[in-house]
Image 1 (cartoon, rainbow, N blue to C red):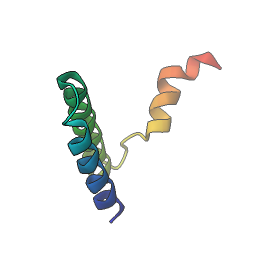
Image 2: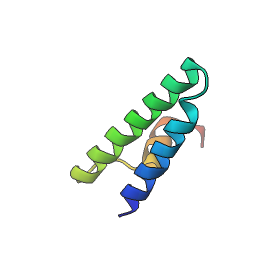
Image 3: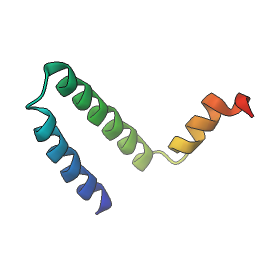
Image 4: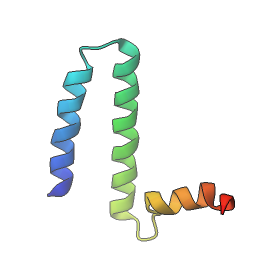
Length: 63
């Protein structure tokens, strides 16, 4: 159910950004696609990393 709320929110954002410059439009569309693919993989994959785990993997050496 929460995924549907975020889907509606991203569609509203898309229609707002669509009226702006082409570069912003494609950047937001790319971001929406990447986040959607991430969420689909996380929904079906048991060991899919959370965003916090990815941040720790990438920046964990800073500790």
